Amino acid sequence: MPGSSSPVIENPWQTLRRFTSARIALGRAGVSLPTDAQLAFQLAHAQARDAVHLALDAEHLQAALRAAEIPGAAESYILHSAAQDRLTYLQRPDLGRRLSDASRGMLTDADHQFIQQAPLYDVGFVVADGLSALAISNNTVPFLATLQTRIAAHGWRQAPLAIVRQGRVAVGDEVGSLLRTRLVVVLIGERPGLSSPDSMGLYISWMPRVGMSDAERNCISNIRPGGMSYSEAAYRLDYLLVEARRRQLTGVQLKDESGVEAVLEDASKRPQVPASLSFLTPVTPANEG
Image (tube, one colour):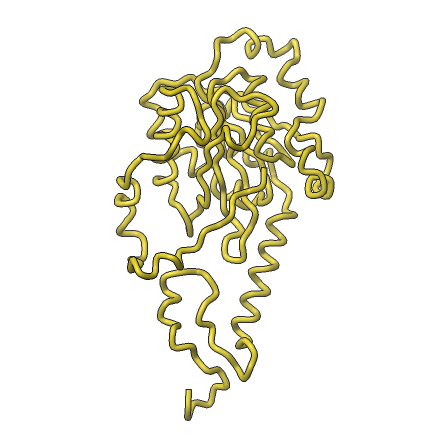
């Protein structure tokens, strides 16, 4: 500002920044970004890169799920996709969509006949690191705990939980088919954004099988403390699961018509964004399957 000792010229739209985490109205120093803004950008970029390469501590997550008494956690599995390491996973998306031979054998081994002979499970949950193990580490346990308060009333039989290292969305189809579950829900770390390295997505499939297309799945995205709340995501997922069972399908023919109750439930916790500024609300792109 004129007369100020600071070289930074503030942007007159800076008041809009309280409505969004997007990088808008940062001001300038000469013809460049202010140093603070540039350093914040570099930090966010580093956090996004770290989220992509961070290894999932599957054993710690399994223990946390068991401690929280999440259904299916006591008999849960730690599996691995056909991508042997992180570099292969990033370069070969197709390998992340299938289980390794050893993991497939864990679900078809003669020592696990209770899986093969049991009636179909109603729903199964597959947790995959995806492109952000950070998202899975931070959000899986509190989200599933919140969800159980809703779906417990349905009396559904839940399959053993599966935690998959180096997994992509479609790996849940193979796991779900081997566990013989009617519905499978994949919890996966989404591609990090520059303001959201910890965003988790959900993918729902009816009668999962290898080779399903993305059009046969439903998705709920951007689940994290700074995005969609656990209670809202649980509300929407519960609606989709009930409707999927009733209509025996998921995908483009199943729309989220759950209403606004969950949004209103958390309204007091969110900043009030004027309708004219709603386009500024950040959206995290979903994980590539």
